[in-house]
Amino acid sequence: MSQVLPYVWLAGADGVDIHELLQTRRQELDRLLLEHGAILLRNFDVGSMEKFQSCTQLLAGAAAAYIDGNSPRTKLSESIYTSTEYPAELSISMHNELSYSHAWPARLYFCCITAPRSGGSTLIADSRALLRELPPEVLAAFEEKGVTYVRNLHGGAGATIGKSWQQTFETEQRSVVEQYCRDGAIEYAWKPDGGIRLIQRRPATALHPRTGERVWFNQVDQFHPSTNPPDVYQAIMEIYGDDPFEMPQYGCFGDGTPIPDSMLAAVRDGMARLSVAFPWEAGDMMIIDNMLTAHGRSPFTGARKILVSMSS
Image 1 (cartoon, rainbow, N blue to C red):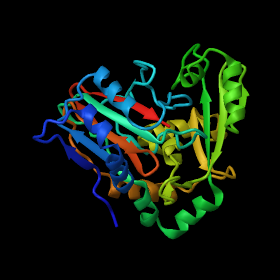
Image 2: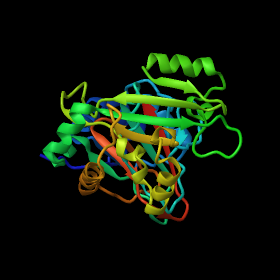
Image 3: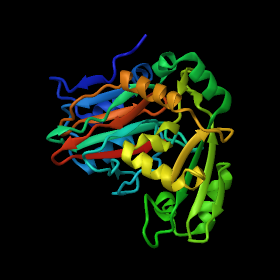
């Protein structure tokens, strides 16, 4: 049965401060998060980076850096980042953060400093429910084959697309990147132009470590070039169609075979049916269980400042 998403916890007349709430009601918050997948804390006025950081430090789990992260962000402190810095007119497709990596955050924390004039929702969807939404033959194919993620990260020189390997791994040292790849069973190859190719093979689903529930836990549709607008998709295929492993990023089945467009469409359609939007208000804070709940972003107008933190 679908749960209310997100669970909304409003500040009450008792005047309990957010810090006191996070300290004294942690077990209740944990239970609600496992049940619903996301909690929106509203009217607690978490309206600054400093207050947001102090709140995340009170919650369970060590702060996690955005190492191996694929999205453009600005690191504001050791544990606080901006939300993905894509143009306002674009959507960000639904995904579970770092599901392509061997080390993903257990929880995500969002804080609204400035609400957009319109749009800009952080969309959320139940990853458990998606398994029930997918056609059985689609789910079976993904579970049997798994998925492969390919990234070609540039070295920061010349005309570039996407993040450099230095930005992705927050280091200038190749040896640090190589050790990370070895630890995570990531195939890697340095390229003559100073870039690096990364190939990560992952399961398409996973078991939640605390609830034991099976969840859809991959973002291969986001890596596939068909996630782009049709004209961009066509241009990418014209350039890289003969060797998709040369694309800036690419997704296919775990055995290297292409994923049919119809299956990618089934995944995206399922996510679209399940996605929930709510308008951000300045001072809002949201906690997401990263395995139980996928997230994305709708286009927006006006200024929008959402901060993100992660924990293991």
